[in-house]
Structure formats: structure tokens, C-alpha cells
Length: 112
Image (cartoon, rainbow, N blue to C red):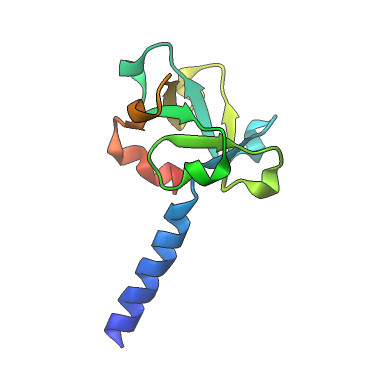
């Protein structure tokens, strides 16, 4: 019984993690799951993000983001703040896919 429960929890968590990087940018703060601030420098960010061209490239929670056209297609809705103090998560957009990664793993839960 305990093995079934643990297995069920792992399957649920894995399922949530698989596609957590499809995001939709909303117009209002109250619509967002996560409030984001884009930093000017890599060292200031919690997460280094690379924008991918296709949704299938956005698997996992490793900084590869696909921006959807519609909110229902996304796993997370995000709002981009004007000020750092308003944000739950600070990101920096990188130029290459291999640069995408978490710099502060304690914030990972925000994108699950």
C-alpha cells in the first residue's frame, strides 16, 4: 500500500514537472501564477532563461521556456514587473540554450 502511494505521488510530481516551462505572459499582475523581473545582468538572476522555438523543447524545469499564444496552452502564467521588489522570480534571458539553468535552486518550486 505504501509503495503504491509513493509511486502515485512520484508520477504526479513527474507529470507536473514535465511541461512546466510553457508560459503565457499576462497583462495584469492578479492573473499571474508567478511575477517575473528581468534583470540586466546574469549574476542578478535566480534563473537563466532561454526562449525555445517549439513547445516540445520546453520539457522540464531547467530554464527552457516556450511562450504560448494562449493562456490555456501554458502551464504557468507570468507577469513581468517593472521593479525587482515586486517579483517572485528574477530571470535573465541568455543567448544560448546550454546557458539556461537555475542559479538559486530554492526558487525552483515557483515553476513546478
